[in-house]
Image (cartoon, rainbow, N blue to C red; front, top):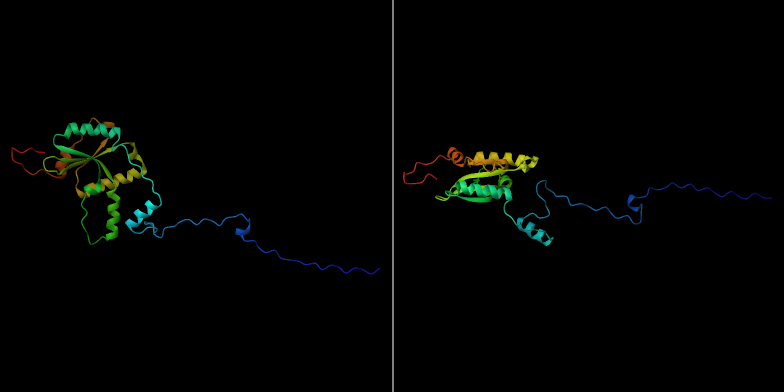
Amino acid sequence: MPRKAASPIIITTPKPVPSSAASPLAKPPTRGYTPQKTYRDSRWQERDELFQGMVAEGILLEGKEWLITRCEKNYFDNLEKWFGHYCHIHCQVSLGRLINFPEQPEFSEEERKRFFAIYNGMAMDYVLVSKKNNKIVCVIELDDPSHERADRIIRDRWLNTIMTLAQVPFVRASVTKLEEMPPVWDTRDKIRPLVPTAKSEPLH
């Protein structure tokens, strides 16, 4: 009986399967948005473009009901009692309203804008302004436990430096001593000595 010819053996080398084809239901990876600059998001370059773009994207804003906390209001009432006869007392004033930043050739416009942005957003708890001449008498910060956070410690260090450089009378008060009168006049007189006045004129 004649033998049957043996069937040829075919050896194939498996080809690697792309990871994206591992599953027919696999979705392409989502590509995140990466800004081109380390300090500025390139999606909206100009301020108006940023404003309009974020409004168009549906930005959520909520108005605050209260300007200051209950603790800050209690201290405000004490400041009115101590200094209200001579001073207007304003709350939550931007530091940018209290500091002049003249042009200086050793700093670029971009550097000045970025430095200004650092302190312009700082809100001072209380600003005492003379009723007689409308001059700034003193700035007061009421320190609560939030000032112990790492970010607030850095912020307070910056603030202390700015107040010293700008020679703004500045006092830090503590929430644990709301009934203690701050040394407003002494602080003001050390930074901005009083100009001699006529006897008939009030000192403050």
